[in-house]
Amino acid sequence: MEESPEELQEGHLVSLNSPPNRFGRPKNDGEVSPNLFVANCGPAVGLSHDDIASVFCKFGELNGVYGADESGTRVIVSYSDLGSAQAAMMALHGQPCSELGGRSLYIRYSVLQPNPQDLLQAVDSRPWNCLAKRRVQHYGYEFCYDIRNVNTKRCLGELPSFLSPTLERISSCPAFKNADSIVLDQLTVNEYPPGVGLSPHIDTHSAFEDLIFSLSLAGPCIMEFRRYEDGAQLPRVASSTVTKVESPEDGSNFIRKAIYLPPRSLLLISGEARYAWHHYIPHHKIDKVNGRVIRRASRRVSFTLRKVRTGLCKCEYPQYCDSRK
Ligand SMILES: O=C(O)CCC(=O)C(=O)O
Ligand SMILES: [Fe+2]
Image (cartoon, rainbow, N blue to C red; front, side, top):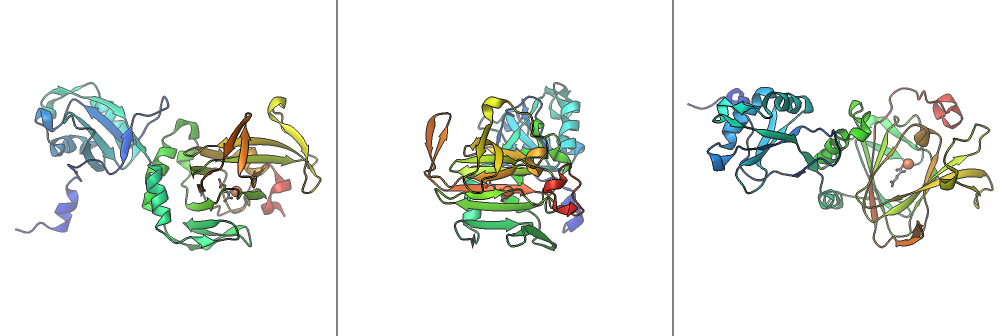
């Protein structure tokens, strides 16, 4: 008899092959994830991935069960959401499991480690838009440089699947504890040749919500933050890290802080830094970082992730806010 599609959908998705992505131990205390590393079960002790899936699927929808390594006694159980992984962890960790031969399972969270080469290959295989000095790609919504805003009426579709490990990694990091409540829906990929930077700007308040993430890949850069004097109180910051300078471009006064962004680093711009400070990438081929000379030898490719704003911005910095004008 032929199985109906409904019956097929009820089965759990199990893969006997290696996982589609690399998994690793969380780097930060308290980091949680929808993926579990489960030791003391597997094909080498007579438990197939199917047997393991039939126990873990009681806690939520599974993406798959994969061999964690060659041992045959350690697996990755991947859920489609965090709550299911937490429920399975609570119920099964350290307990003898009668449905798995009475074996005691050792379980910890395991995080997806996005592979930078996969991300670069993915964007390099897609069409770039050429600007005067750099190339860009937009996903989710197009960013229009002439109006410095997005056209919210024209959605380009969901963010591409090659970004999923990166989004999962961001939402599982305790340092970004506000990030899991916002669903990032816009990606701009920038490719800067060596020596090309970005002029100072504040991302338009009405275009994007508070949190702006930027992942640096391939080469490094310096990002400078500038708070221009505008009559408002200057923020209190350690004097050793702040330089007050006369801007060579426009003669206005500002304070600045420069941050070195190495490849594979993720920058979060939020709050005052997002709403009141300009960010700027100097047009240099060589940067000085703590007295060391760092050459921008290769291109830098950045993935800037944001959430498109649908209402007015209600920030505390009306002097920089286009929603108040
Ligand atoms: O390249 C970056 O990290 C920043 C890009 C940026 O500031 C922007 O697209 O608004
Ligand atoms: Fe920006």
